[in-house]
Image (tube, protein in one colour):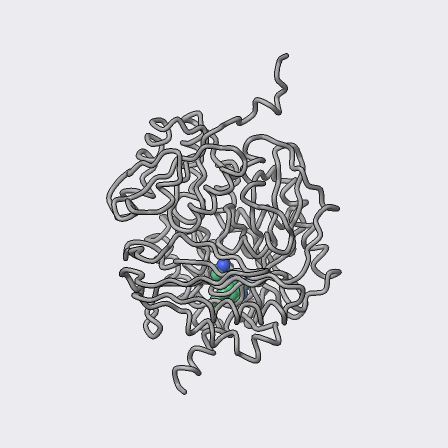
Length: 460
Ligand code: MV4
């Protein structure tokens, strides 16, 4: 019998995981559960990685420096060909939001487990992302969805229309890079000149845009998943306000204190936007939330570090679903099936100095991890593991789930108490202190809370 389009589309039985660390472990598990074979890759620094042993193939693709291994597109494509992979999962970071890589993967006849190169490119340019979202009816921060002109008078008029304070952002930026707050008119042109020069150097584009600067927002994001057949659902929301220097430290789902009837239209607008732009795969809509209103800022076109809190509350295996839609399957989930339950927290355990926050490399001499109902640990490390200085300092994610936020906090305190990492410095003591904080326990702390809290703690 001839196979249908759906059966043949994007079919693959072997996935190359173009990443390292805990997410390589997470993706490998999802692949095996789906009956797929896996190809692990590594740099010279990661030769001893435990997930290498459990993969069907394991290839060292280059030196320790990420630029020569995990970011080396040709080496990864060659490894895929040698190992017979039919698809590449990019994980997060590295090549996950690189449109040229997604394109090269497809041109090599492989499936990129992620959105199309064109979707990645649209969202990579923060101005075209904003334009697409405004067109789809997603609420955005006040300000034009076009690049700032060069004419000083026009720029001044735009700022006055928005109202000070405003923020200048680079179209090629995102995640906190290439932006500058302008408190009042007298420093407007200076701020633009500086940001333009930084943008040109860092992103190879001088394109800038302007928005109203929101002073005390929370960072709330909406997770979506879409197939190639016109189906899209949102899986609830997360609060990621607890961050330092744009690095998230604790995430939770759902965002506390957000009434269902106020988030519902935002979630539906995200789904509508996905359908309108023909989005496929998993994605995250980032919003600032202030005084009861949501304002879109960016869309992430990758699987995110904090996806587990949404898995815990929604019961959906996001990585499996992501792989299945990449295989061309119809989403086996409709919006009516999505029922988020309980509360989930994630703590990022980083190998870092508790005072300076600099990465702490070395051998883990002793490791104890918590276990029990509602506790999940995503990690690639074990006793004897050598944390290398080359990459991100994330060594484990501690995730808990409980019926209520207060119970989930208690469960996280218990999980943190049962976590022991020796031989390297970690942020565990700091996470334990944070989970004793009264304002955090109340919920509704904004994006500036953690840095203020750290400042007070240092002073004490
Ligand atoms: C903003 C903002 C206030 N107003 N945009 C920082 C990361 C990037 N994704 C966007 N960011 C911000 N954009 C307007 N119009 C404040 C931030 C911001 C922030 C946002 C989310 C989480 C943490 C943050 C920390 C500092 C500034």
